[in-house]
Length: 134
Image (cartoon, rainbow, N blue to C red; front, side):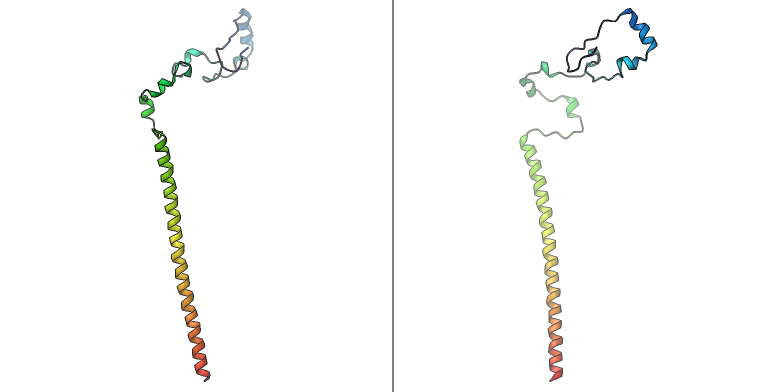
C-alpha cells in the first residue's frame, strides 16, 4: 500500500502470486496511472528535480543559472526594480486620466460657447421682436 504525504515510497514486497493476480486484473486498476510527479513515483526518474534540503541561504547569492536567464520570463533583480515598475504603471494611469480630464474640459468649454451663442441668438431675437412692436 502506498502512503501519501511525501518521503520515500514504501513499495510492498512482491509475492509470487502477484504476477498471477495481475495477469487476471488490469494493472491500471491495481497501480493506477503513471504520474512522474506523484508521491509514489520512482526516485530514479527525477534527476532534474531539485530539492531544497541541500541548499543554504548562501546559495541564494550564487549567480543565476543559464537556463533561468534564457527563459522568457521577465526577471527583476531587486525590490527597487519592482517598485519602479509599479510607479511607471501608476504614472501611465495618471497620465491617461489627465488626458481624459483635458478632453472633458475642452468639450465642456465648447458646450459653454455653444450655449452662450444660443443665448445670444435668443436675446437678439427678443430684441428684434421688441423693436418690431415699437
